[in-house]
Image 1 (tube, rainbow over the protein chains, first blue to last red):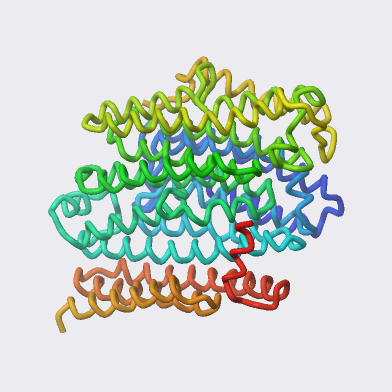
Image 2: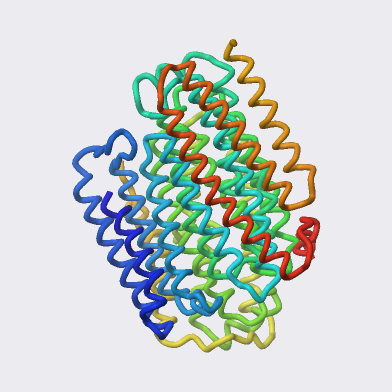
Length: 457
Length: 99
């Protein structure tokens, strides 16, 4: 609970820090210290709440899972700000506001991870989304950024309407907004067309937010058009936060009628994996490839929603962290190179060995090679699906798609190491940058060797 | 009047809004259609509030109104920003991103 308040206070403080501080570097340092303070607040919440579920007026409740998730996502944000601080400040003139909006997004993420009332879920998703529309359009010189912002706004507002209709229909069927109350859980079990349509609409709205097929079509354009550090935020931290709300709502509240929505989710998984992976193969720009790759990875994370058991919760946690770390590493490389097509990466291995090696580790983790965190993420989620039973076909399909995904990740690796060329960077990475890349890669390897570090149950 | 009448009315309004979003090309008209969707939801919320004899969903309506206002203010400023650059609010210009 403290973390929610602190995140907003730091956001407001940063908003006004643009008036006080003249230099951009001071704002950056304030933002980094703010994120570390937020991490401390989250750790305090975790220690406080680990004994029991703490509930606030039946609106927000913190259990061990959501507190752990909040700590992890805040840790990722600290790393994100450290790696991208310079790039965020370079987007435009209003650097203090960009950092402030990132903290408001975090506030939304905490609300989503800890809701017990559909009102809080709705508010959380909106607080998470609205700053993103602004951030996507923050590069005012670039027309692509404008168009990304407009497209994202229209699609996001449309999906909000669908989410609200779903919430209303579920309310009509149950008569309660509190998704953990006796009344809600009893009412949702009695078959009712209103609640079925409502659950379907909520699933579609979530699919919009996590960019799962068939409503993924905005993703490549928006991710490609937004400034790269903002794309890194949208593809990682925002996406995994929405996934936590998704799994919480569908497992804890709609879990008893799983047979009704599981078919929909399994169709989404197949389509997402197919579209994401097949289209990613044909991309020339690495940034656009990462957009399609994030669609494909969302397909894997949907397995956690599909399989109703404890393994899927732990699997989602590990997969989310592994995916976030690995994507941040690749996006860091994309912000460094001048030309982010595959050609622009040629010869990076010879000229900048540290950046090249850490990027390759991140790409291996995204593919799911053993010894990296991505392997155990995929392993847990697929195990959860197998435990679920009657879904062996879809697991085989996912493994096949993971094999296909290695094509476009390895193509980048071969560009980095095995092609002759002169990869040019925007700025030479200093020793601080290199340390961060190495820390990021080390975290991926440590989680790949000791996946038990992240587990709740 | 039976509750079903209100249900059908608000679902009809919602569908008109969805069709508008999918078919119109003018960004401001799309924004208006999104507002129509949200207002259909508001109407349905009030209906269910009456049906369940509970005030919860009327409170929810206030939150939807506030969020919708925030969203429109962001949306109109984004549209104004795009208009300044390309002198058009036709969303077909978005296809330029595909290249």
